[in-house]
Image 1 (cartoon, rainbow, N blue to C red):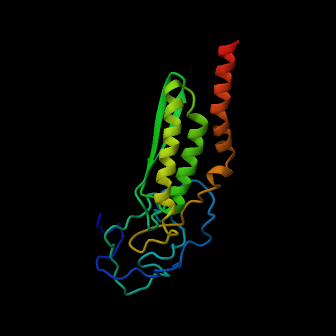
Image 2: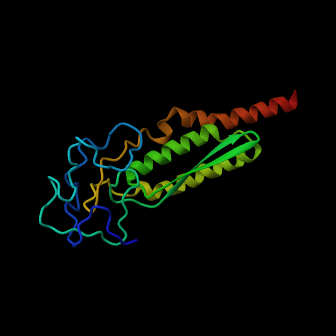
Length: 198
């Protein structure tokens, strides 16, 4: 997809700061909080480094959006990849299918992957169909994770507005919800076997 992003100047020039870390993302990674909404330039907020026309951005250099460059849907950072992570909730009789679709930068995407996968492991087992759908959903997320994890570190977007990415949080196996979710299917199987034999 080739298009200038909102706020991008009209003329082309090279992407400043590549390779390496350009100025910007003060304090990242490790920014606390949930996934942020796209930066809207709230009143009183200091200019985000790396934005056209703001301090820290090379002046007098036109900018262009190279073919294939995608901004993260949460923070506007680049590079980003188009990935859809899925979740599942089993509710005995009914079930619920969830999804969260990119493009995501590396940090925001890993946060979405870890959040949806750990919750699926806890909420997805309760139903005959869900008992099969849940491991398939988790496996799909694990396969798609590589597309996000292999991205370079998020950079400020010189073609439009962006702000620091979300903290992806603890790794999947460092989350108590993940371990609880891995224990649940074995506990349910043990309960079914016990009920069937007594």
